Image 1 (cartoon, rainbow, N blue to C red):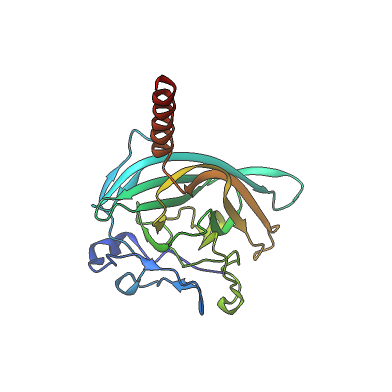
Image 2 (spheres, one colour):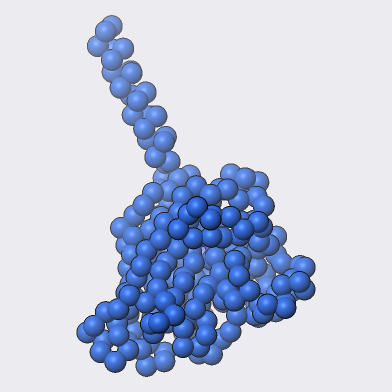
Length: 254
């Protein structure tokens, strides 16, 4: 599947009308929401802000109403193209959680940086843990070479299949891409999910990086730890536990 980033170096100056709002992901009917190779009409594009994060494992361009809450990097492996029984480190997954200061909502960010010396392809990023929460999608970029977000849906289906095959899954957000070193597309932009979840935590196997096998690679999904929504912020749990302890202490003294 030959797809290319729509943002060339000279195109950034012409990028004057990106979307200013996330697109809500449907829970019925046609599930998949599509972006566009034309930046002026890409409904998923969120205007970037000032580049930050130089003291972190990676950098990003935060939209002006975003603040960073947490960030981490994970190196992931895929099967070797010539010998699927051998696994190689082919890239890193950059994971972040932001606060949208305009409404207080959490935003989960995903970005892939492939190793230029290795082979491999990622067709889908799956993020888990969204049952019971709203989800809206968007993306922003760090460099002029960042690959745009092709589409997003609440489904575990791969983006290379027809959208008629998408099956709603409330727990999963699928973010479609085609990052591939051999096709000179080693970077994605920041793929963003905005949700009404009240908190987040680091969860085991919370992210799936899917190589669909469309170009003779072995089909494989690498599952890695990542940030995931949780019902109540960790601080609230600690605060509630502290209050419960005070209540028990007061009862004992009484």
